[in-house]
Length: 201
Image (tube, rainbow, N blue to C red):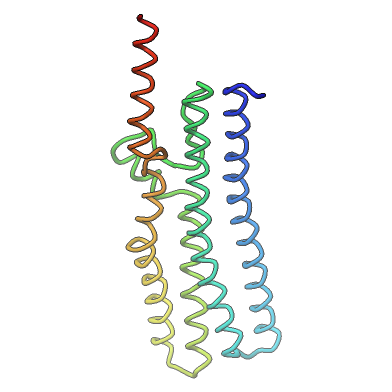
């Protein structure tokens, strides 16, 4: 039968691997989506025409990547935080904050590192992709140039606004919510106090 430290080490390894898997999945999915984008643009350049269904497919793929990026980020943070808690409380090796940027800093530096991260770079990539494919879709309908530019700017900014209003709070919640419930924490404190009293007696 494994000792408590050995069990904690095994659990830490599993959560660590899960967090890394989410990060790797996001990277490879983005690589594949960008390769498909390049292929679609290559077809448009080769044919010399813009087809609405190609632009619509590119827009749909950009939206898929936008939400996929958010979902994988939430899972990645949750797995990493559990791994960090196990590393700190059970293994005694200190807090592990690999996936949560700016957690140990304050002020402007914390705000900057929390805002600008690899994750935000993915968000910007997909926001620009949504704007770009939306503008190309508008272009296929024979609209005037200023409307195409407006479509690009409006969709890009709307995507970013949607992210910061609806998706960003969920990611912040995943970074800050208690890993152990308050009830469980109270039970552990009572158990620790009872052990301390038994040792004194």
